[in-house]
Length: 119
Ligand SMILES: Nc1nc2c(c(=O)[nH]1)N=C([C@H](O)[C@@H](O)CO)CN2
Image (cartoon, rainbow, N blue to C red):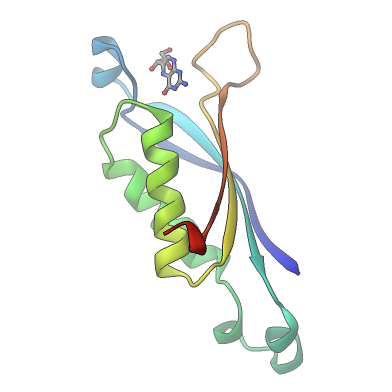
């Protein structure tokens, strides 16, 4: 199995539990690993036969900027379902960082693994 990945995809959005968070933009960082097989793309040299990390990044950015949710858990689950359903990925690992959330920590966040079989 091969992997197409996106590292430290940075998106500014409104997210958080507290009232003050609903009035500001905060930066989130996504690390994403998607199982795939690069064989056909490698042999044909054709983007059509692989996962387009640019298209996936743009979809994640657009969704996140409009999401208006409170919890990282809600957002990361939504992003997993988008990747599995719209990009024919069978397994995805997503780490979602909210680096500004806890002053004493470099970063905090959620990591999930989802497969298309989980529905
Ligand atoms: N597991 C989580 N814990 C917390 C979250 C979250 O989304 N998931 N959110 C907050 C606040 O919004 C925080 O980021 C404000 O600094 C607290 N804990």
